[in-house]
Image 1: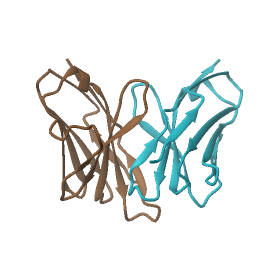
Image 2 (image 1 turned 180 degrees about the vertical axis):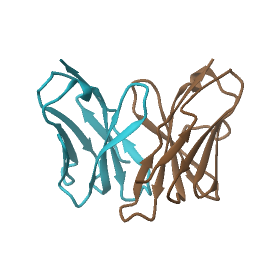
Image 3 (image 1 turned 135 degrees about the horizontal axis):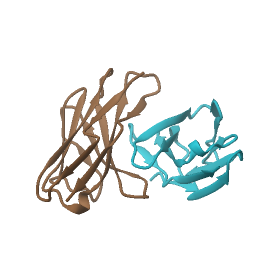
Length: 113
Length: 117
């Protein structure tokens, strides 16, 4: 059974610092990996989707890497802003799951002004 | 882009009543939809897989008779929480699989906050 772990569980940084969020998964037979943002009391916002054949995806200040063989993905957020404060979730779509995503517990990020 | 609409976004109901949450795929057909639940400060846990025209597949520990799922059309799945109790208060979110996309993309609804009083 696929297990997804996110470290750290919480992170607080001053504005301007770069953020590094880690996600690991136990079964490398994945279809894709997705990073989401969740604000308190809100739903999910998809940030980046990395297909299993890709090594990384970039969108603005966000960059996500994927090392399938080692079961790891990292989300980098450059030059953090207070508006980046949220919970970040990674989710893995396993090859045999037909759409069932396995989520990590999330990393709660606070960016202080 | 594809959108999944979930309604209502927030609902408050009395203990013992039932409440229905709808999940619609707006511009694609979704033969498969998924229902997740999220307790405060915890991650999303899959409750069930909803298949159009057939019975839902429930994850271990999820009560089928309490969480009724109906997927009567290719664009609509509903989750009904029956005889709701305060412990059912949670965030419920659906996702839909666009099988026609090359990557089998999964789209999420915006979620529904249920409060049982």
